[in-house]
Length: 232
Length: 232
DNA sequence: CGTTGGTTTGATGGAGATCAAGCCTCGTGG
DNA sequence: CCACGAGGCTTGATCTCCATCAAACCAACG
Image (cartoon, rainbow over all chains, first blue to last red; front, side, top):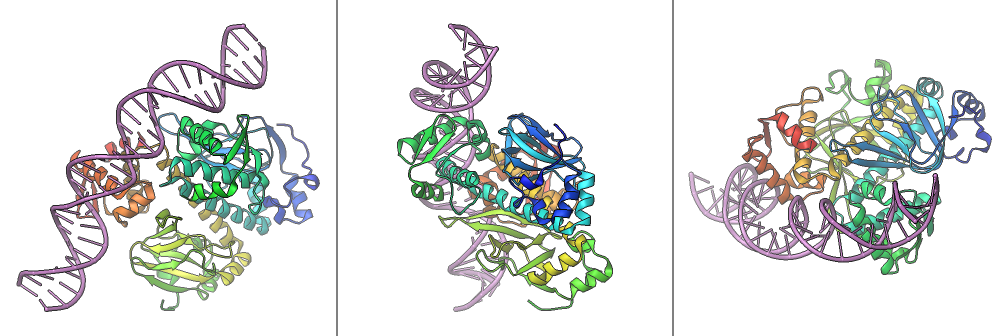
């Protein structure tokens, strides 16, 4: 949780994150309020129920937004990729847990001061609205991915989504990448069990649609086929 | 699609919708851009793939946001209740269909002009951001409601959610209300089949947890029990 | 090494999908 | 006024996919 001065000039997400909507002077002002924070895999950034007094932009790594249900099982509601924004500006307390899936770097801001900047620089508000709309669209896409689809369709769709996320641009998905999540996390995202996810992956490998490098590495051998499998 | 002048003064959602963030003068300006529109059950407001050139606030009634998958089945991604906002301000084309579930009244605005007002009145942008965040939270709640839960839990949770929506305030849910949706629409929302939804409802009735008035009416006989059933 | 956390594989059972009738209820027209 | 039909709803019988239970495997690490 070291409080370094922010180095926006060399920030890898400087033109994709919400703060990209600001000009240099405005960004400079915002940067004086924030600080960098590093998380290791498994570290918790926000805890459900805590005061919602900070927000953050993800610079590198990956986060999960999750919830523990009444029976103690974790449900992953969303993944956050670099340039993503987390934190609730309107609720007094956090609704969900936000946890690092891999080692991650963030820009963290005190919520109060961030809100004050939002009101002073409406362009930032617009950028947040755009991000929020995109998150909403993504959440609905995930819902569509889960409902009324078989385990095979869900896993295929998930792999395609991760390929897009891995390359940063949806136009040309990566054909070889590492999953940032464990089998259990995939299962939680897709509403399946670990075993079913594992079986679907071995099946895809047997059918020569993908190859696996260790537990996390994925290579697409037949991306087109994967697409038709996902579409069902 | 009659173009009446908007009557904000008597609008039933005037202090809950996004435009509530504006003062009277600003709202007057916005109102000159919009027009009222009535939809009958089943009417389509926006069609997936069409140019996203309008947005709207729901005054009364109920809408569904839906998507047709590759196999031709409709998936309902969200319900919209009065004071809700629909339309995409950032995408060039609509991602989803927006269809009336019951006869509905809306305020419709040309997107271009609405955006222009948003930039001029940042308070409106903030209000939209707040709405969007709430929609996002609701979408995630629906995801949590669907994943890893049995059919009984989903239906119970759905009934509670509808009771809250029917009364407008989450603090005191209605104990007697009409569902705005058909069995098929419930099934689509919950990722179940019509038959399963029907069976769960008859089961709840047999167990004296609810009573049914015709096909759409629901009375809670034992709301507490319904809550424990939903929690699982 | 042994331990630990994640992953794979196998055997079994059950919740819910699917297939197939029958049943209300409302609106239309003879 | 009643017959009729069309949607929507309920109920039953069967089947299937995935959860569950159980055990072995693998790699990293102290």
